[in-house]
Image (cartoon, rainbow, N blue to C red; front, top):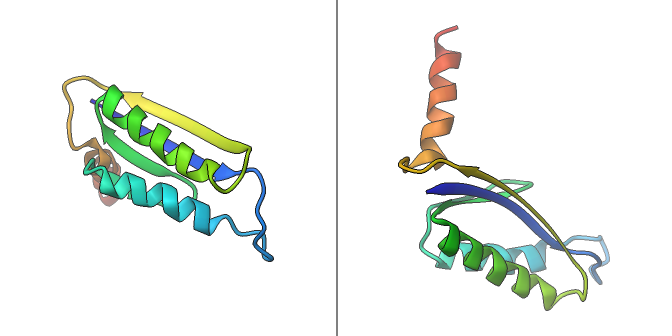
Amino acid sequence: MALFAFSVAPASTDDPDGSFSEAVAEAVRIVRDSGLPNETTAMFTTLEGDWDDCLAVIKAATEAVQKYSSRVSLVIKADIRPGFTDQLSAKVQRVEERLADD
């Protein structure tokens, strides 16, 4: 199992305010429809699962964004930890517990 944090966006947009939100929403829709545990924040979307499943979702999300621009930016960070599940929330919980001890 692993966590994959990724950010995908078109390199350009026709939106008057420069927003990429329409293209990014298409990518996030693919992530949410995947059924994998996920979380979206202002800068990244994080998926939890095995390599093949997560990378297939990231690829599909990237291809969705390509419909908006011929050039796409993709950043991926992975935390690979075999034998551990539910780390999307467990990692944050461990930090919160340490903060509560202060």
